[in-house]
Image (cartoon, rainbow, N blue to C red; front, side, top):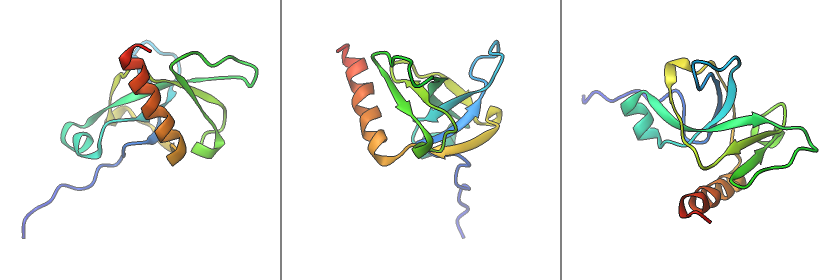
Length: 117
């Protein structure tokens, strides 16, 4: 029998809690955007950084709003132009998964950010 790698604990489009920067006081919600095979190979992942928002707050260009439909307790804007790397061992919880519809919006927003438009 050929040994196989166990499936990754986390998957593309999972929303997790992690302290992205060592200097961050709190953990943040982030969206994993790396493909599953890369996550399993490297033990780390590129993510979209989330920031809590109030309903009256403006969403900036390049940000997408996630909410309870994605498994979050509060409104969270994710930044689609910057892709920090996090080590999977630093993740403390999986809290949700981005809805299929919002995945498409995120992909279009990332493409627009990379084009500079």
